[in-house]
Image 1 (cartoon, rainbow, N blue to C red):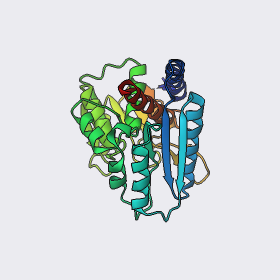
Image 2 (image 1 turned 45 degrees about the vertical axis):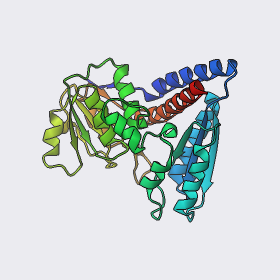
Image 3 (image 1 turned 45 degrees about the horizontal axis):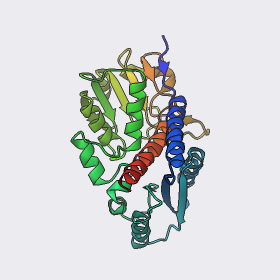
Image 4 (image 1 turned 30 degrees about the vertical axis):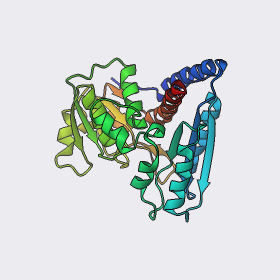
Length: 286
C-alpha cells in the first residue's frame, strides 16, 4: 500500500492566508506593515532564485521587503555595517542573510551580528539556546516547518523513535531539539554513521537532510514509518530528487514528503511566520 503524501504547498498556503489576515487586521488598526530585509552576497544562481521567491511572497502577503544584493568582493565589515543599520531600522522586523556566503566572510560572525529580536532565520546562538531549553523564540525555519507537517497529521510524538540523518546547524541539530522538546526519543546521525541502515530501520520517524541523492532506500525503512525528505538535488538530466529514493520508500512508509512540494514550501512559510512574530512583538512594545 502506497504511503500517504504530505502536501507542503497546501499547508504553506493556509499559513500564508493566516498571515495575510493578521497583517490586514493590524493595518486597519493603524499599524505599519511588517518588514523583511534580505541580504545576498555574490551571484549564486540558486540563492538568487530563493531570494526572488521570498521577495514575491512578501509582496503577496502585504509585507514590506527590501533586497540588498552585494558584490562577492564585499568585505565582512561592510556586511556587518549594513546589518547594524538594519538592526536600528524601525521599518524592518526581520533580517535574513542568504547562505552560503563567500569564503572570506565568516558566516557565524555575520549571523551573530543580527539582533536576536530580528533573527527570523532562527540561526542566532540566542535563538538556538532558547530552543535547546524548550523556550523557543524564533525557530529555525526548516525544522519548524517539519513540525507543522507532523502536526497536520495529528501524530503524537511522545515516546516515538526518531532518527535524523544530517547534523547541520540549519536542519539536523535544531530538528533534534524540536523533537526532543516534543518528547520523542532522538538519534542524530550522519551519512557516514556506522550501521546506518540498521539504525534507520528502528525509527518511527525518519528525517533526512544530507544532500545525497536517493541515499535512503526502501530497505532502510520500517513499515508504516513517517519519512521526511529535506534534500533537494538536481541530477545530470535536470530532474529534482530528494535524499530519499521516493519510488522505493513510498511502498513502505506510512507518510512521505514529495520532492519538490514537501518541506520546501514550509521553510519559506515559517520564515514569513517568524517575520510576523517579530513584527507583532515590536508593535506590541510600540
